Length: 238
Image 1: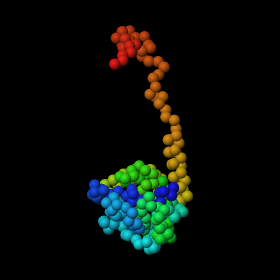
Image 2: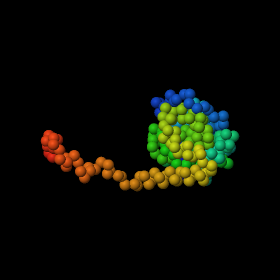
Image 3: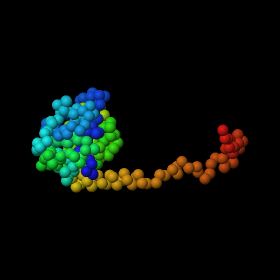
Image 4: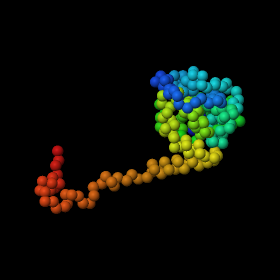
């Protein structure tokens, strides 16, 4: 599930209608939130850029090392509740780049002692709503915070976008399951079990039997009411 590891500016939508946000939800973190902005995106649609305009995220330079947890494809382990102390002490950083330009993105110049991947989640941003793993910057940040036990902080960040509440609502079951895990390995197991159930449900033949007519009907029964009998036995084609 490497596609879930970082945020893409292709899906980072914070259109003018999103600028209002939702105030009064959660509270800000007391640890750093940062990003490497590769300038791949449309500034008007980038959730990372909006956070920067609001002063809610720190911009990192290429080559600059971040001491906290970083969401990156070079990670080996998934984010898990075991990372709570790392996040609380040193924060979270994301890579703001285009999904279409992953091959040319210099991830080796965005270093951290704690590289991580995100498990399976579904995007709720306006560009990629409903698409697996196509998370925007703010969704990736919120997911990490939520899984690590910082639910209030996650809600606070999502509250800066008018559509933000949808991300947690759409993924609430999975996020809560991930937040209860004890390790990265358990996160992966929960993810895989969820995906297997989803696939099984998708492959299951549809049962339309409840819509089929039964073998007997009121028309087969003798009825003294001649008007009802006539209606039941008549084929009316219009």
